[in-house]
Image (cartoon, rainbow, N blue to C red; front, top):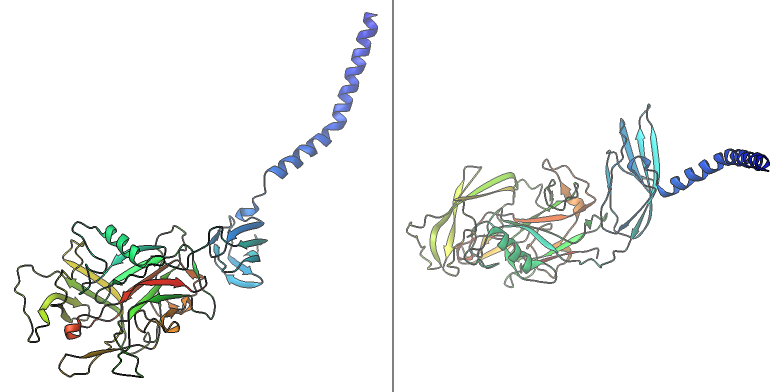
Length: 407
């Protein structure tokens, strides 16, 4: 009985081994299929499908390299760089293709990008001010107000409180070169053939000169930057938006100016009109060898040099527009500031939307060559004219808010 039981057990175990061996290929195949479903293939750094909100950037960084590259969106070539940033203003599904053009290692990958509406609605207005550095001027330390002990960060915050969101409080940029840098809660997309954003100033036309675009134009030059490194700070290259005067022979490229703090012990020198308290208040020098002064007038007795800056000098560089002021009185008592045709802040009254709106497609490099940008993450405005107009004081760009025209 015992031998019969042992013989049955050996036969049973042998049959179990045979059955297990025959099932092994099936079990291995099942295991592999399970792994392939749980762990997605990496496709050399590119997925098959992406989902992003509109007006947000998608960085695409393939792992492979080659001699040349081509990115296409909906069949149109959009880049020949190794990396590409996809950006779309409108919702929908976009077909993209990446190619490595190389005899030895050719590669092609097609994929989809689903662009969706944002979960939290974007604001069309400024979200944040990143920099505020005005040049000396009669409204500096007043718009916005400086309080004793304020730091540069405090003044940036105050400037942001003035012009962010639906706030509409004027800030000054002071004399030539003074600037502010701001951004939105999304990328302002460069839509072909359209103006992309608008900026409000405080220009008005002279009612005594009907039919003429002249009055209080204090043109500010606009620059834009695309956050190509996607780090959220304005440290990428800047490009000027070429306005109507960009190619004028009267426009100076590569201009630099340096303002010098006034000597607190010097004796002020007033003029004969009783409107200027100090004709030689803040001295400036430039890279053309010229020099001059920002006078101090009796209407604004505060310090004109940014009080939160401890340095003895303050320098700016950029494009210089020709003076636009005309002394209609002939004796310095009545000035009218001519508006340039288009492309500048605080250059036409706000009711002229088209003349206060800007197209990112007008971006140019330092040599004047047009630059194709998919959008702008940061916008900078600086005073573009270096002139003083008697009791009116220096020409200084002012602005109060900005808006993305695509929202």
